Image (cartoon, rainbow, N blue to C red; front, side, top):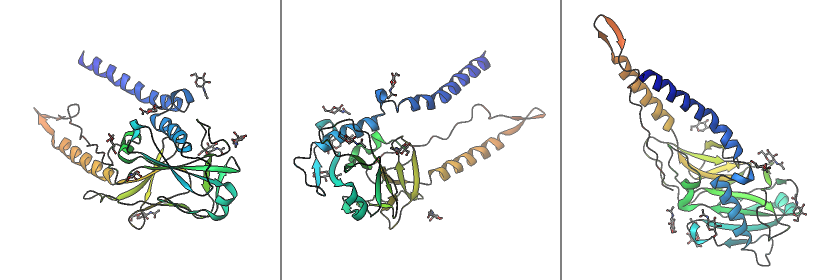
Length: 261
Ligand SMILES: *[C@@H]1O[C@H](CO)[C@@H](O)[C@H](O)[C@H]1NC(C)=O
Ligand SMILES: *[C@@H]1O[C@H](CO)[C@@H](O)[C@H](O)[C@H]1NC(C)=O
Ligand SMILES: *[C@@H]1O[C@H](CO)[C@@H](O)[C@H](O)[C@H]1NC(C)=O
Ligand SMILES: *[C@@H]1O[C@H](CO)[C@@H](O)[C@H](O)[C@H]1NC(C)=O
Ligand SMILES: *[C@@H]1O[C@H](CO)[C@@H](O)[C@H](O)[C@H]1NC(C)=O
Ligand SMILES: *[C@@H]1O[C@H](CO)[C@@H](O)[C@H](O)[C@H]1NC(C)=O
Ligand SMILES: *[C@@H]1O[C@H](CO)[C@@H](O)[C@H](O)[C@H]1NC(C)=O
């Protein structure tokens, strides 16, 4: 009976696991945006409100609704040709070199900057890692209609040097951990890369960026190894037969999840 129940719950667990990616894939459908993508759309609209007869090449700070205080946004309107030829030496933490182009082509575009502040870990959950900086976003949109909302992002790609991000106030990594850059694409996929000069990350694309603690995996492996050793020791003699005593009841190491943006 106990065994049957166990197999049943296993099957349910497995089904849940295999259905998850499908559910996630569906969430790219406009009717069920992820919270992070819904936030992007909202911040695009609020960033565009910062424009009042905007000059090109001047960053304008936007105001966010009161339920999102702690998040800062900026909007910068540029001619696409100027972005490609000159870049933007300094756009808050971002340094945009020459050679950045957008896809599809537009004559003018808006670069929306986001600083998610103390809400970083709410929208970009990375369990097992600690944010050492806020999550910053850099997204590009068509600038033809500054009253537009729900605009699709334009892809921007650095064709020569990468775009660099110089974070201010990076918290120090916890003991035994190494700081790594993390980058999220618009589909919620993340990747890690090395930090340079203690506070710099680089990217060839739009997205969301931060610095976290790395090496948690090593800790997990160590814990697993310890658990395996513990298990081996439990191979004790029961009567005259060697029996694994710790197959089912083995306690899994629990990882702490910290968010400290
Ligand atoms: C989103 O899904 C709904 C039904 O689930 C469908 O009718 C609609 O066409 C989809 N939209 C897009 C943009 O795929
Ligand atoms: C915050 O408020 C804005 C404007 O009232 C609303 O559109 C948005 O859905 C709210 N967002 C959250 C996360 O509560
Ligand atoms: C973030 O900070 C703002 C003040 O800057 C505060 O109003 C808000 O409650 C904080 N949000 C979270 C999730 O800590
Ligand atoms: C933008 O990039 C994504 C992959 O990152 C790709 O799937 C999409 O087709 C691109 N869109 C355009 C208009 O190039
Ligand atoms: C957000 O903007 C406010 C006002 O300009 C500033 O005081 C605050 O330091 C900014 N926060 C971040 C996280 O940059
Ligand atoms: C940009 O917006 C203008 C005005 O809404 C539209 O005519 C044009 O097709 C848009 N360009 C792209 C690439 O979406
Ligand atoms: C990242 O840093 C590690 C450790 O310092 C080094 O071994 C590795 O080669 C670096 N990777 C890249 C792509 O620079």
